[in-house]
Amino acid sequence: MISDSTLYRLKQFIAGYFHEDMDIHGPTWEDVLQAAMDDRTPAELREMAAALRQYADDHEDGPELKRLMLYELGSCLRTEAVGFTPRQWLYRAAELVREEADRRSMARA
Image (tube, rainbow, N blue to C red; front, side, top):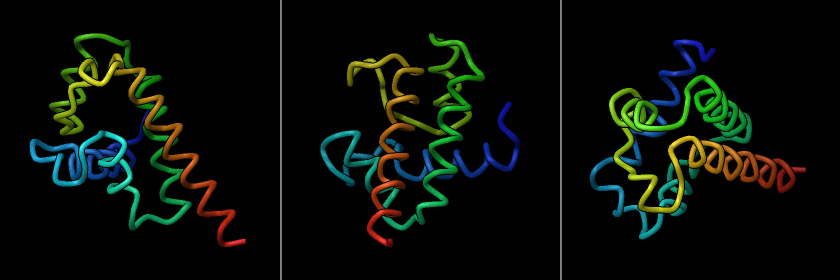
């Protein structure tokens, strides 16, 4: 189960970029995710990747998760419009965030 403090940080990560004007960050959801990652350290990105995955693990896929992503996380992304169920999108986003954390860690080494 995701902790309240981690849920708060996850909400800031998601709602801060996946809002109704998310296209200002780029034409694709991957561009928006990249913007959300821009000023974060590898440790922060690893935390967000784990939080995305834990959030997906904590909820069954379907309409309720879609509702939670909107009302609890503040995401205006319609995951079905980009070819994912809500849970699939959370897992894919977690994977991309983790890859970015690893890339940045390697660059610092």
